[in-house]
Image (cartoon, rainbow, N blue to C red):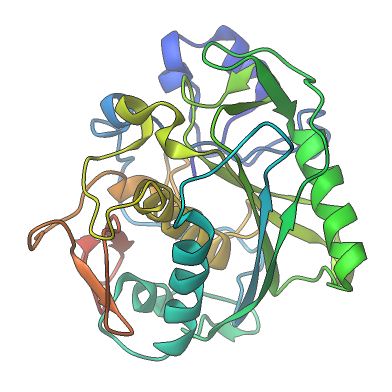
Length: 306
């Protein structure tokens, strides 16, 4: 996602479009080091950065393990297939590891000092979190809003309860229920972002995570309109792919991004290439709609391979 400094966001125009620059985020950012955002549909289609991605010296994920957390407090809900479809998606991405037939293989051209990214993903597990939610912020669309700090705290609590460790090869996706908003600093779900990824801590115990609001809380902001599995999960899976691929290639905001600060997912946001009916990807034999990913080798957005 685009790198954004909280102080820059405050001075930016509506949706903060002008705030993206190549310099990495300030590590002392109290908002939780939000690297940026999957901008809403109407905003992102005209902002794809500039030139190829450049390497800035930080780590990439050579292999990755994913955990899914569904925060569904009492009084809130998700669609009937939401959890099972997202779990199937992560399992399918893992099952097709090493194949060149989907967007994940694109990341294998990027590297750090220890070598290149491998398309080698695994799904570690999932949990439903029914802990009551307390509003810690205010947004434009919901009556309950959680902060980035609350997201981090909830992830750590669920991970600890399940014996899941944090490390530089593991990412936690926090999926909040329909109608729950969130903010990182002054930037909030649905008005500024549809999802973002970030990190907390450092070294061998670093927490890599993604904040995944329920996309169809505000469909005209975060849903492209394709539903190959006839469920709200389809919209969330698209932005999940964006965050997963960006964490792989730029886990802590100091690896791969272009000279305007855009990561591989940002440069192709809401670009789906060739769509067959309502899907553009077949992963482990199942249909999905996923945005394209940026390939330096092709100097453009690609649907599979490099």
